Length: 162
Length: 162
DNA sequence: TGAAACGTTAAGAACAAACTGAACGTAGTG
DNA sequence: CACTACGTTCAGTTTGTTCTTAACGTTTCA
Image (cartoon, rainbow over all chains, first blue to last red; front, top):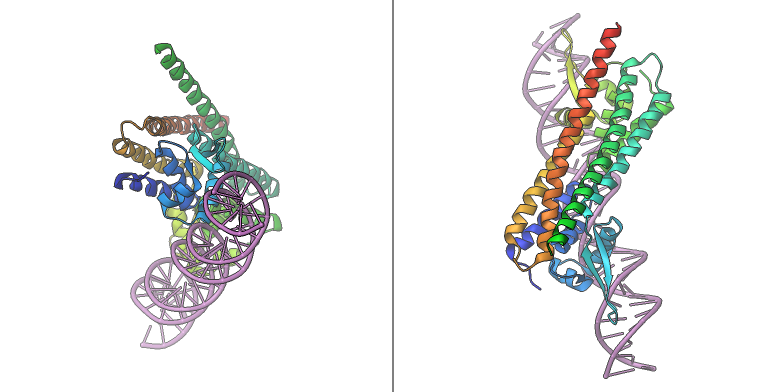
């Protein structure tokens, strides 16, 4: 397998974006590569395509796996690990990010117990912080549910056509 | 002004969380401090409370300002800059994050033009990536609108009580 | 006019994160 | 059994980021 110039570009941009989201550039690249691969790739193949040490790929592929961006595929009679992009990885990336929102809620609640009664401005801000993230989490979960429902509807429509 | 132990804790945790979201710890601390302050704070006050150099506070306070987390307050007859937490800063933090989603959409579209027609698996993944983020952006905007509407309703209810 | 207070900027130091190369353990294979 | 292929881990290096110190320009006031 060989990457075209454009494909390499896609992979690199995925790396940069993923880096901005707090991940490592290489794990973003791995995910990007798996997105456009036409079959599951072994560690060595990823290493060759991305020009990164095997040690780093080993680590980052596992990170992708743990984040639900990729999954390991094993082939009987083949000792190698293959990786492929997980379906629905983007939904998962969003719901994972909700954990931070949970912590902000916890923090706002804790803050409210610590802040002086007389400090109304702060209490208002913390209350809003708590309420907003509670709202956002609920709404985001509903959003993902709606998305999944729509996907299912499309899938069954496709099947009926077959 | 003096911070209690619990307040200092709150500030530090805001720093850590903000760091996880890709910012610097100190800008998160500044934001946290402004959240719980009972009045706008000058650069020197922030410097003293956070035990960080004035240069760093100058930079990070401006970062908070540009991200919409804080705003400058000026007082007539006072040469100092005061900062206070912006109302609705959390909504803004979310909508800012949607810019990344826009780039992912752009990237998916570009990828679709670059990927071989025969690579159906990749085309499916990229299509889903594009559609999902389009969906997510639209839904998130609606979510924020609903939140604002609810806030407005609460505010006017409060006013009627007065 | 000189000094003090204020915010900003630039250079360098300190720190943290990510990658590499090498060594290791394990499992197949000739 | 020796040898190779494979994935993992760890120490060391590299790289990038963030903070500090110091210098600067501006404004205010004695």
